[in-house]
Image (tube, rainbow, N blue to C red; front, top):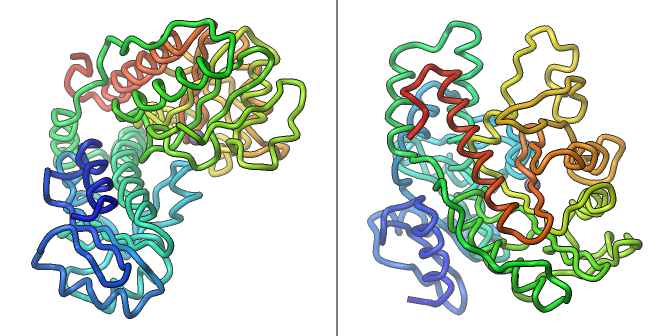
Length: 390
Ligand SMILES: [Zn+2]
């Protein structure tokens, strides 16, 4: 099999999104290469004539994603509409098409990055690279997981969470163990030079992805060494950071317009007003779910809370702040630094978790895991599901 096809097949399997050997990937070079024979190959092949694409990914999700997706599809019309920030920005909505209907699939994929084929799986082409399809199918499964719990919390508050849905949630919980209580042992700081700082970032990034604390592989990481903030580039895979880390002097944000993470300004602000030496940002799923579960039904900012939440909220022991990616007036560069000045971690509403370490990534990683474990427990407690704990 072609090396790229194999690479993304492995990534899907390592993330637990598919059963080994079950993903179907295709890439068009001189000719169209498929990762393996599959009964659906002939069904998908005409997409390469119909759409301006050079690659394609199709997966039959493994559990608990299949369960979540099937349940969401059963009650949905022609699309799923997730509310978490990354998905809203990246995917908008997720079209649902009937099984066996090529026209419906081609038309959905001409307007969206990916689509769910009801009861069959998730399909996503790439116009430039195979990586695009990989990111899209991963994001659709992440969004489905977050949405089924977010919807359940809303139903619980309105007294409309029925027994059938509750039973499905219980099965999903049983199939989604909590993250480990013990953090991996990472390089010890402080890091005084570029080489050790970058090596520590590469190691921490790989572990964040390995432990599933991300949506596909997105997030960002930085490390302050000798007055320079080393930060992952925007859109980089956290598990492949070698060569995609930018140096930005702490007193000069002029590299912000280039390739550095879109959240560079927030990172600079955090270093500026606290004692952090490293920053870790992931998108752990229960943290994202919990950050969106607001108790206030009469909130005047309902629907705009991602940018404008007026409450001083805490969840899983850390502050929950609003804030949009970027440097605008409602950017998280204004909300995160003050929150992290007094706490080792903070959640950005509907988006993800930021943690800091005063020496190295060990502390930041422990805090990220603790927040995700506490978020899972709290979500399950609010839903009255099982004991949450394990
Ligand atoms: Zn993020």
